[in-house]
Image (cartoon, rainbow, N blue to C red):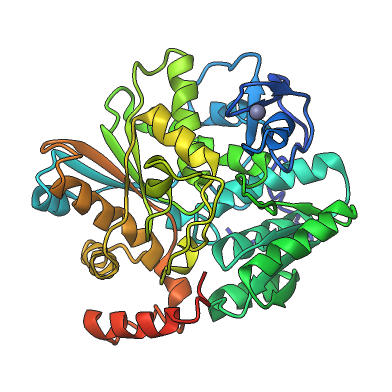
Amino acid sequence: MPISPGERRSIPQPVRFGKPSPFLNGLRCIKCAKVWPLDDHLSGCPACAQAGTPASVAPSFFHLPSLCTPQDIPFWMAYPGASELGEGNTPLIDLPRLATQNDLERLMVKNEAANPSGSHKDRMSAALVRRALDIGPRKVALASSGNAGASLAAYCASAGIECVVVTTQGMAPGWRRSIELSGAELIVVGDPVSRWELIAERVRSGEWYPATNFTTPAVGSNPFAVDGLRAMAFELYLTLGSDQPTDIVVPVSRADLLWGITKGYADLVSAGLLKVMPRIHAAEPFPRISRALAGENWAGRFEGQSPFRSLGGDSVTYQAIAALQQSRGLVVSPDTDETITAQVDLGRQGLFVETSSAIVLSGLQTLRRQSDIARGASVLLVATSHGYKEVDSRLGNRSMGVAETLQKLRFDCSDGSLQ
Ligand SMILES: [Zn+2]
């Protein structure tokens, strides 16, 4: 119906609480279990940091209310609030042909590319912005090579908060353009380590509020941002009930997503809503977590070349190890060429995902070959990011064949610029 002159139509506004949950009783160290007062423990648990074994903290609750409908999910979060830009409740898609090819009873994808900025980072950004609104005006900052920066810039723009994204020359044009359009400040530094150094300096001076890690050895991202990822487990519970997947595969870098989903499922088990959580497996582009699990000091450096810009870095976080232990998950490092082929396989199912996201399918195939995921299992893959953002970038040039793409990737990686 047309709107007559002078008529006003009310537009529903999202509720932006910016206040912590009344059920929150502090932040619990994920390693030593000490509960700290509600505050920004940005370097993780103070006691574990002093002991030389840095570990992140996670919101801890006195009690969690009922969880019967999607409207209940915000009240399981540290900072309840309505969806800001439409994040969350992403599609769950069955892939019956790939299930048959991999001898699985069921294969599903949780399509996080359907979030507003095209990645799961929107769940973190929405949660982080609520915390930022609660603690007062300060410029929010993060180190990012793409998805996290584009996402936080959008959510800060929506909330009217200043944002700064510190990146390197390797950022793809699509991400750069979206950050610039949001009005966020974009600072380009020489290498990934310099990003963290700049953020650490400005955080210590009180100028910036960090959304991501800036410490060495690394802990996870801001705990209030990571908390937003728990909602993915709650959505899967409400959609699938007791018919949960036996196995979930997620891509990992510093394992915010792996930890967030695992913590969400742990909460569901603690609340008596599920008897057991799925096994949650990590797919990484080169051995890092697997070396730590084999006995190397997880607080050390794990150098390697990753052609997948969203999965770079040379650090392992304690939250990765804790999540795999809690969920009885495994870690795999599929071949790069298999991951590139997996992106094509997902495209043939109608899903255009970032190459970094396709590692969940190559990871699944590796786990099936090794019989680490059983024949007849029910598997969920988390597709974290949309492929459009790589168009016009080195990985996005799909006019090249797989072999040609691989050759170019190896050349591009020789200077480590993609990490
Ligand atoms: Zn601790």
